[in-house]
Image 1 (cartoon, rainbow over the protein chains, first blue to last red):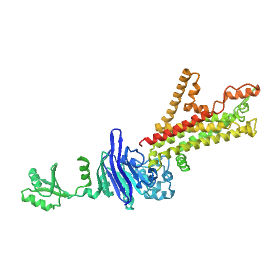
Image 2: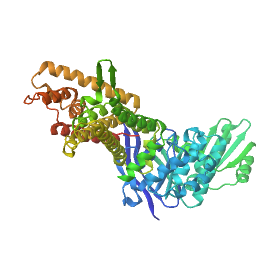
Image 3: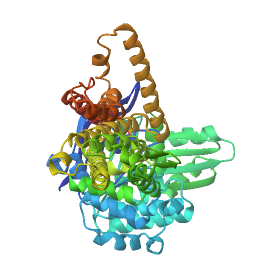
Image 4: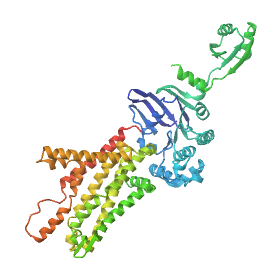
Length: 299
Length: 275
């Protein structure tokens, strides 16, 4: 598969802060990547480096197998970083014309892309009159102008109202459905879970996990159990049951993680035979959120 | 090059403030012609400035370029704000993300500086030519084409001055502060000038001419004493004119070097910074 972006041993230091720490990953054509990490984990810095606005301290990155310079490569990329930045005194059309001139492409796609993001009616309004949601949509239109080979989105729904979030997600899903490669940085887990096929988890600039989203969440699941009193007895019993990897207490709930598939009925009858009557028993698949929290907290 | 210029013109032509300032600037350049209208006619005293020889070829080239260069501050505002606004609107970041390189970004600004300076020079040339043909006592081609180097000096002076403005715009990122920084530099240079004249009286001019603003001032020297000198010479043939009013190659070189330094520093600064 064709590699669109390749990052190896990338480092960025701001004074004593090591914002990006020896980061390496590849982006393959046609996949939807998510970069997950808490606020301040180095997501935006990493994107800033590959987008030519932040200088790297050491390491390398190359676009399209390193065949062209970064600024030439960026003409084939569509990117939205944090806030939409346009000239406030220009209309949507004038702003997009400027982007076309920079990217050296004809003006022909402007109207089509404005229609895609539902801004066609307001195309002659000045940028400064737009609401945040409209500004963000214009930024998406601008990123799509060149029919990019990869679309980079940094917190695209940040600061939007629920309707705005929904609209932006719908647009992203439509774009992904067309086979466009997407790199989406976010701290919103359900966003990544809904849209991405691959995920990269970073914390304090260090890569914690890279791989498929479904592999990250894959496990045999866990049980939530509750009894009246006798909690200690329950825990002892559970630890003696083959297939239970670990148990821990979460307020009055007992969480038992599994290392092989066990049916709810098996565990229920085992406990009942040993004289423990449950008041609560639920089998769950761990969510991306739990996986993410355990990855980012435990080390 | 045309692509970069085209990008920058696109940014300027949709900006009302810039358009108004540029329009005012060119109106002011034309207003030099109004000097011709200064006319006193109070009983026995009849005075018509245009008849005093200021519009005589080739002196007019000197006089008009000198007067016109006083209006450069209007364009300085345009240039400083076109640079600083890229920072405050964060559009610089967006331009780079869209695929403009940092080098291309600085060049697009520099080409615009050259274009504006060239337009100003052409404008002054046309205004002077017309005024000269109306009021000059001599219209022979050989006299009209004498001293055209003042136009060249005017062009170099504007390019140098605006490049300084560009650099300050990148350095301090805010238009108002950048203009303020230019003013502070001017005061600093005046102060140094005072000190130098006090300490090294003999070589003071030689030391001062390497400073950017001083070098730009030296390009076109004040034309007023020359006017009387010209008149005196006309009356008393044989007397030497003590001051040299011509454009010095060394001053041109100094300003060109400063221009290169300012543009290079702008690029180096932009390259070094994280946005």
